Length: 319
Image 1 (cartoon, rainbow, N blue to C red):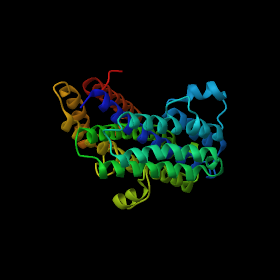
Image 2: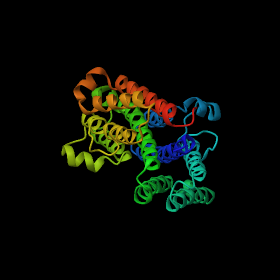
Image 3: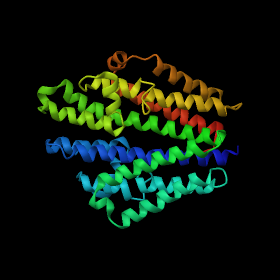
């Protein structure tokens, strides 16, 4: 496969997954902002949202130092001037799909193109202003549809492998960012309840919202069958290979698809990915917590970025 074709497929999948993850993070912040809580804690949630995507500086440049929920959502949904907004991600996914129109199936192209057109229509008709939650659910649904069409219609060859690598790598990055920011903020309250002063039921709803943001609430109940505690949330989202959006599951997908497209240059990238997969496979949550969750996840993100750079170097168009 031509490196340029692989590049378009890889980034098409990453942008679709990024749009979904942005919608998920915005949705959980929007839902938790409706809970009874202090103004300071509510603002911290939106500040964390910008921090996850590394957009705090750009937001302040546009809107100043004050954090306004409506401005943050507008910035992350329909501002076309930065690459992490939903509209920018869907546009980039569509352009990458158009560039490899002859490689992907008609169904996948029509799904991606229709998502872009319909999203713009919804923005013009002010659907987002009337009901942000419904728009976020729609974006998630269209991402699910895109993945289903991809798996259900694409030939199981290198094109599908690069689409899957992009999806899993982006998902691992976003899950780690979400867990890092939210665990740091909420687990601090959990372990320091006297200073937080939040009611236990409020804390429960915040952790529940985080699980729902990664479609993990029902899975948590099925696996652990007890109250929601930060240690178990972290274990589910980091180490459980049977949890679709966990770090372990994502790295299993990356390693498997890298094996299928391996070439003479990719041995070192495969080694790095395999080593990270093994660390997750044999890791224990008590050891991770003893090391420090923030330090562990920061190191994980560095390793994921290193693997992404290796994939670009070995297979794709050089940056």
